[in-house]
Image 1 (cartoon, rainbow, N blue to C red):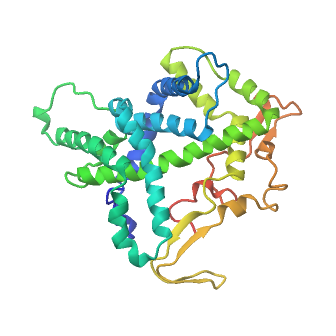
Image 2 (image 1 turned 180 degrees about the horizontal axis):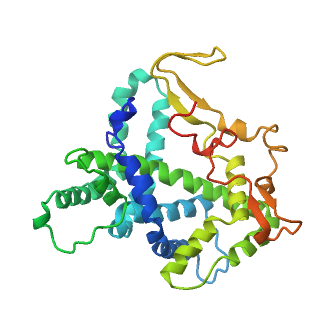
Image 3 (image 1 turned 90 degrees about the vertical axis):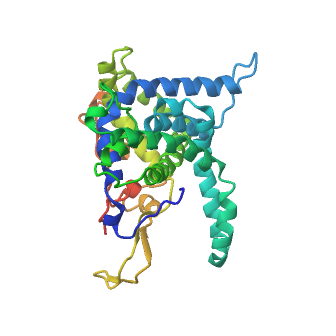
Length: 351
């Protein structure tokens, strides 16, 4: 991640990334809905047109490849703005970077740690995606930091700030010199790594589950068709996106898919900084790493009866015997983090 240094003392890592993502990005999400809708449509069209041969009615596509292309295109727009998101060279590098990093990590895992200092520089030479991303992102970050540090009387009048994660990090960097341009680029790359691979995997799994459980297609269509409004009015688009986010059967379907096929088998990783003993006598030494077996928890029959069965109804209840979409309610949301569904971890201070 271009030399990102993560401190064991959480305070030393600062809170800029928290302010930028949890406050800056979340508060601006509605402004992205219309553009993201267009990007997703165009990305689907490009993938179909590229794979379709003349005179061919059906097209064979890799679910994961298409999902990864869509996630890369949409996230690049939100993270880095329309200029970089429309650059095909940058997009390819952004798509390849997580895979390059995975390859490097797995290679190092297979060799003795004694060889890591010698092998790491060699492996870094092949991380072309990282190099291209850094070359494109760094000038933009440096220019924006420079603009922010110009005294107010000398700034360009009516200068409209970009709306993307780069700018959210700039705005959160309130104290001059708190984070350098290199530091912001490093953290952006770290967040990017987490924000591309796992969502693409989740989309691929959802589409596979939908194809293997066609009995749910009509229910999903009915629920979404009652929500979607075909209009170009941006305010209505924002309201429609908000409604889609609160569709109970869609939410339950997504949650059941990720429960059965999580992107990782463990979660809530914590490094022990000093010796600690739990109430049951389990003792941890400094340097130990502990985690939750999230996949095992979500396949526990005592928590989820008939746990290996794909059954979205386990997260739903109906207000009456009528199971139409309008009568359904979620008993547990897809985004809910708790000890029986540790898909999203359990917070910074969970034990």
